[in-house]
Image (cartoon, rainbow, N blue to C red; front, side, top):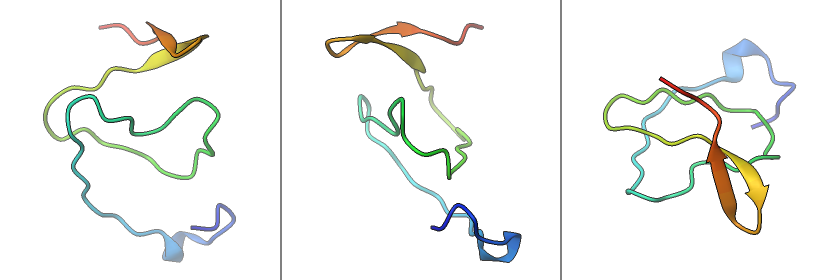
Length: 58
């Protein structure tokens, strides 16, 4: 999807992810939004060498 697209081009859909699957990574273009309908997601800030630290709290 072109990030410069008009609102009429945006489409909504449903995706499922398996436990442990990476949805997006730090540095990816922010052209999508995600809504967690069920389950939980961990948001981590890159620490280097594949490690991460939590960046959102409850």
